[in-house]
Image (cartoon, rainbow, N blue to C red; front, side, top):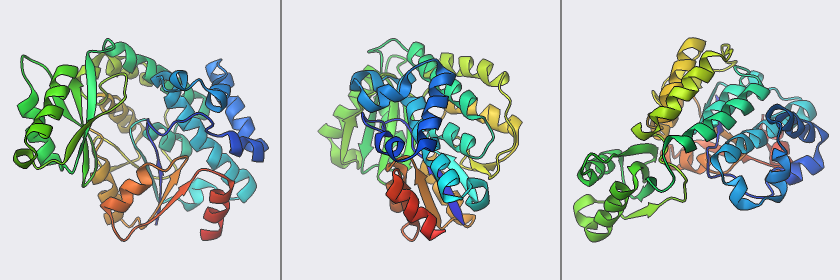
Length: 316
């Protein structure tokens, strides 16, 4: 069974989608559709930058989704391969969950773009710049990360596990001072915590922690007004690591996802246990390598350009 998986924030870079658009009118048309939905020249920003503007959450989120959907559009229109016919399930890392739902025809493209634009804006508004932070804990499992996060909390400040990415990488999120304490604690006593290193992440807000509650409330309102239908393939949800197809439950989980933990490692294990042995990352090369570290015997393919699309077609 094939699982189609979608990257989250951090996979954006200036030039993204340029080669694909040059090679395919179908890709260009999709980028234009996203631009029209947002009333913004997003694809120009993707092609040309500046990098600091593309890095803004409100731009990076729809840009990453647009590239994933452009790859699928080319796969379908030029390769004759429709995701609904070849995917046993879908999943996405954080914002990639929206890409996954769009790919499975649960949410239309234009609506997905608008939701992600709002999501990015709401996340940035939720916490003033400089008050929150995130850090990757390398060589950590969830239990070690939870112990460290609890020890780093003080004076009511939040430090919590945000992403359980793979067996050797967990991300923590919360107040900047608490995250800085956690990183310092690892540096000062690696043996005690059993964690190799804490690396501050270049993010503008502390995602997937209780500080994002205002953003969750904004997304709840927007999602209440969004028509969601059953996806063509089950979605393995970030916050439960379980398959879901019911639109009402999907809507609720998307709200929970804003403040909740991204249980990516568990999601991959669940997909694999349910029969997924081929994982296809669409539009990036981020979550695919994580899969390889989670399930050693899985076949993993990353699809970003025309050569990748042709290789995928041959493998199906």
